[in-house]
Image 1 (cartoon, rainbow, N blue to C red):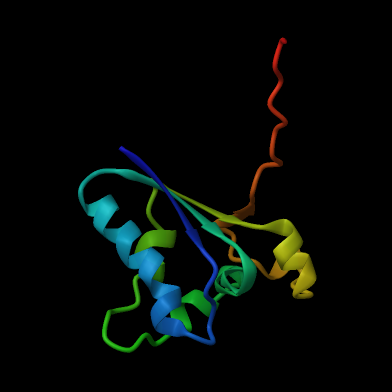
Image 2 (image 1 turned 45 degrees about the horizontal axis):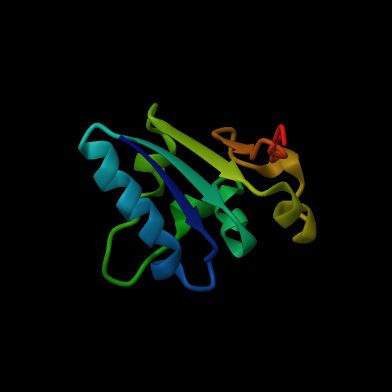
Length: 108
């Protein structure tokens, strides 16, 4: 199975920010593939070293386990990155920008 997970929480709420990574880690342990999409403040987790530094209250930090797994695509929203003044070269090498949306074409 392939899961697509979106996240909007960043370092200001590390517990909420880590929940998508915990879900992704569970899916990966079951042999599934995951695409994790970072939006809004969650793009801050894509900055080199930032995700690994989070200290969630209660659950463990699963950032490295997920980001380093071969069955994961870690995508960051480019407009969200640009709006926060993040330089693309500061992103974790395992993070890439989301592919542009394709307009559906219909033959009416």
